[in-house]
Image (cartoon, rainbow, N blue to C red):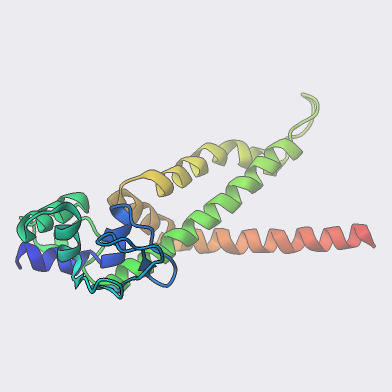
Length: 206
């Protein structure tokens, strides 16, 4: 597989555009960087771009060629470097989960879900730590307080990694969280606790 094929297979146009500073809206439109464009007139599809204003069009390599005034080969090299693609390794060894875009999309959704559950759990632990802290040294430690003390740092660490780590590391964390149904179990538990809380509040209100 050539460097060109490798780059085109692994990097979609909207991702590259955003990476290089173009503001892409939800409809996949952005202001064209190749002419004076007051309203977004460039459409970015997965595999190609087209400007309704000036007619500029092409694939992800053409976009970078024009943005940075490079040759096609230099543009492909730049993309490979910026997105962590190593042309000397077979595609299976690339840091990205897999060349097929739907898989990357599914992974991204999974990553967002893991992060949401971790952040919910984090907020719960923080409130437990404050709410159930022992008032006197003689108090029996509440299980929720103990859990908060044990888990807070670790959960915070995982959430931080999911936000800031390299893609390869994030993929491993998401895999770990999905292993043995960890994240699903936590999600169920948080839902159950929320329902119990709501029921409790209703009782108190009544």
